[in-house]
Image 1 (tube, rainbow, N blue to C red):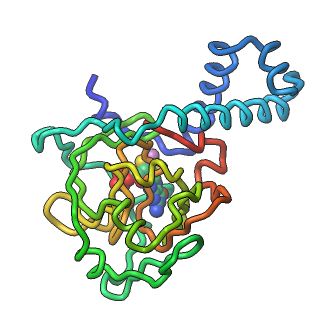
Image 2 (tube, rainbow, N blue to C red; image 1 turned 180 degrees about the horizontal axis):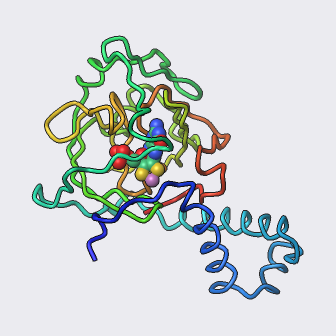
Length: 252
Ligand SMILES: Nc1nc2c(c(=O)[nH]1)N[C@H]1C(S)=C(S)[C@@H](COP(=O)(O)O)O[C@H]1N2
Ligand SMILES: [Mo]
């Protein structure tokens, strides 16, 4: 079966099933119900308590994933011939509702634990070193695709603006009202880039123009498109899907 040829269901269609599968996997494979209730201190006979237990398990899972994450471990890269064409579009809405901005007047806003919070234009970002990557993007909806992004290594940018690299989180606000956040270790990973280009052209609207954060070490939901603002903080900013129950770390 070719995974790229599938007709993709919407999140609304797929989400209840995902939640059920997640429940079954977590409740069956790892632990018995009794052990889970002892570990989490929750009575698992009612739905709210099961939700609470799953949240505790998900937070535990975040810690395990963070402990296993290493900046020396690189995600696979691919030759140009492996690029998926056309690369799929995805968002929490359909293509007809894609939001665009004027590239010349767009500015990246900065806040939080940063020494120099002056906003950045696209021209300024293009003056920084650029890096190209052909990597696999994995979406929680059950599809994956190989794409070709280029842009500024995020670690270079974070050092340049004097971000507090000991802070725990980097939060992203997007102008389509999406938001997400990542751990600092992933922000500093050598394959985490501020993508300005797709292939040999500026990032098109479908893929998040003018700026998206591209990380092959995290699932699609954690790769924000249409970025408007970045914040550096010790308080977990959460995310659009993460706040609805998807695992926060979501490594891939
Ligand atoms: N701003 C914004 N970023 C987003 C999303 C979104 O809806 N809005 N969807 C996420 C999800 S679930 C996926 S799979 C990828 C899709 O990126 P693509 O359109 O380049 O394939 O964007 C991610 N980043
Ligand atoms: Mo996704």
